[in-house]
Picture (tube, rainbow, N blue to C red):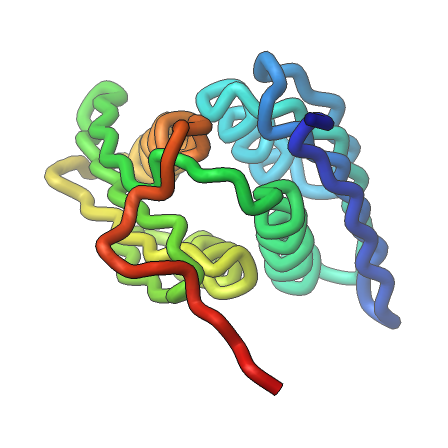
Length: 183
């Protein structure tokens, strides 16, 4: 079988985003981005998920770049999941100084996001990622007061949960049979 990889580009009047993703990577990254904090968060996600990510993200303003990175990365995750059975569900709690954050996910193609984040643009990032990738995502801030630490702990816990949930299994983890669509 080939590796679980995807290459996705999104080019609009406002942004130019490209993402190369290898789910079965080792946590390597090469991120070129106009927003240093977003660059740091994508690198953090790659490291904690053990995904290899090559990304370029440029655009007219922070909101458009952050949103379009989430959409492009979400599409790459969706495409890289090639239909093989996976663990599918995972939860991870990460502490970072004052912050304790838990991420729980289900890669079941029923997108939903409930994100407890003090920064509205990174709440929007997580929701856009979940909607595009088809992830049920819950991020819960257990405690914390430093916004940087809370956001970063959210990315770390999401990364660890993705690493676990994307692990290949021998059989499908479901009580349902695969959906059959008849035309």
